[in-house]
Image (cartoon, rainbow, N blue to C red; front, side):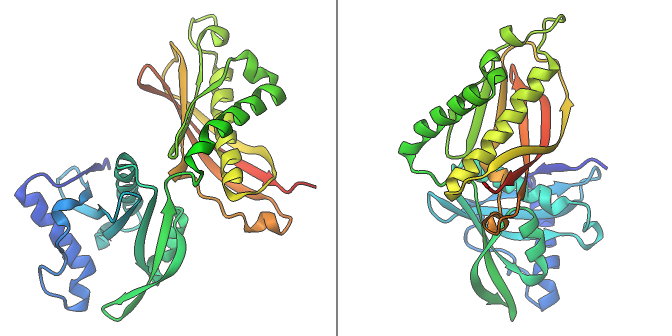
Length: 299
């Protein structure tokens, strides 16, 4: 089945949206209608998953706490549709909205039964939260941005690009460069001319290399952010070539999709980090790269 992710648009859709909230989050604890809403509804961004028949089956909301932080609330999935990954889709929609707001950290309060869901999606335990209806909750957070000082970005960008060109000569020949490093994004670019094939499109090997090195760069930045050192190697990867690349290739790797638990590295063991890279050409998504990078302790 195909899902549509969007905010409610009509009065009937808003009614169905709040009805699902109440059914999942309030009715089991004998809370009255209306308790599923608060004073921030008009200031929030709402996301919902809809079936082909127009039934709302998953909902969630995000609102700003301040210019750096936002909170996810009212995440709910219909009992008939749990286990289909709809909660993750809604949460990703909320995260993307937070990125548009240039939020640096998302927080949420979760009961113990939902903690595994949020941990799987990169949220980390912060502290105990206020109980709700007698149910213990904990506060979780997820960084959407690099925790570097603004003045560090240009130096890190130059160092990463120099590392590629000095240690991987192919990247220099390909003219791979970092087009921007923001608190939320690592973006690289490879021009068509030195990477062209006989069909006058970009060579598949160059596309793969661009995506791989961009993913490698994300892991390098995560290490630097944590103040750690390690040897980064590609352990596994898959790439989907969606469209021919007829011009310059732009690869994008977002910070919010990549969370690392470095505890094993401090114990002398390797850490695995899944990485996603999108490669665009002329505003068209041309390839998707999913890789597993391993960070090995320095001997």
